[in-house]
Image (cartoon, rainbow, N blue to C red; front, side, top):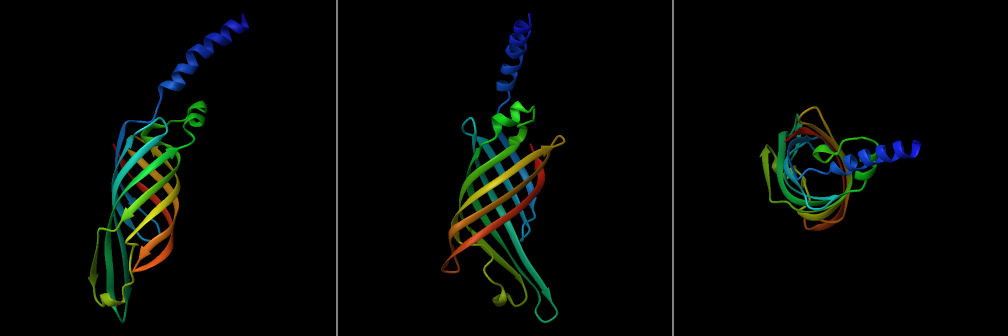
Length: 182
């Protein structure tokens, strides 16, 4: 009798665990709060059971205010495509947690190219380069949804070789994002 009840429970529970999967597509607008504030818009599309492709554009800002130089700053526009692998989907489902809106932990690779940099303010010649011209960013991140459309994420990444101001450099990225998703 106990085996029959256990078999019945497994028969009901296992398909419901497998029925939930990553969504087909999510659109996000978010404010990034790394060392440099940014605004980004991106579309995440599921391309496999645990993988997604993110197409995004970042507007990264840098500014400074001083009594001698005044206000100086710039905005860099950085389009990129990011391939993500969500490694903990099955474990989240087993624990009864949601994977709605791509909630989970991931590793990713993100090639990027800085499309433009727009300076503003006084004494722009003192403004250092804001963002590398090109590179490959390797990330570890996590993201979660909250409420109907809320989203937060944390991402740590490194670009082993980036082209910056005609030189090669290693760039580390720490980014906290808060935004809306549909």
